[in-house]
Length: 75
Image (spheres, rainbow, N blue to C red):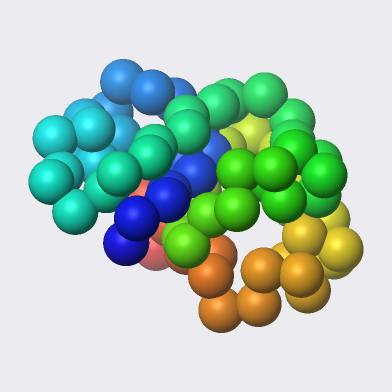
């Protein structure tokens, strides 16, 4: 992975692990609501959502097909 967008709190195990990874050349972290245009500007190889309080729109999910990983802490 080169360019990663992390959606969620910047201070958790996953975000901290991504910050330390040598395999990531660019990491964009945000808790704010994002748009398709904002994500296109980042041109991510992967989008990781963990603890993100906003629902990703169908336009984002369709555009970044198979690049989004959505993690949950509950069963």
